Length: 212
Image (cartoon, rainbow, N blue to C red):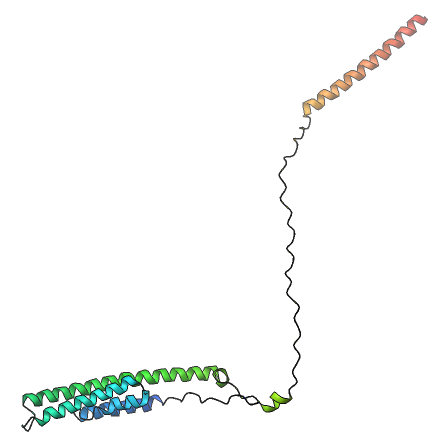
């Protein structure tokens, strides 16, 4: 059993110096030819980006160039000083400016996106976005481990939370006897003791007199 092969990585964009040199060449070609070769810039953008919008712009620039040639063919002066000649020359220069501006915009945007995609692919590595080939030796000879059945999941019982008991106020405690009550109790005990002692003494005294 064979796996998928390596997919081709995105192409590395040209260096900045090469891109700048190409842009200067196509811009100079459009203006030095007075607009007659301005169609080369959008053609370059259409070939590089392969987008329908660039191809439509290239077709429009060629159409404008054909209209200019038609206007020049009706001008019989040597310096295109007639109305048709002036209109054709104006359209030719404006077409050159539009072709150069759109070419620079499309070319810079395309290579900026291409450079970002290439940088992201290099940062992720070749094995992240593209599948790795499966070795036949590993696929055929590597023993497969039986899968261990997992026990069914049993939810843990919820801990029993006792219901809150109603708050019962504690019985009021009797206040401790004050110092005055303690002294009074001691005086009562002392008076009882003296009373008992006096009663015993009187009884002995009376018995002693009766014996005499």
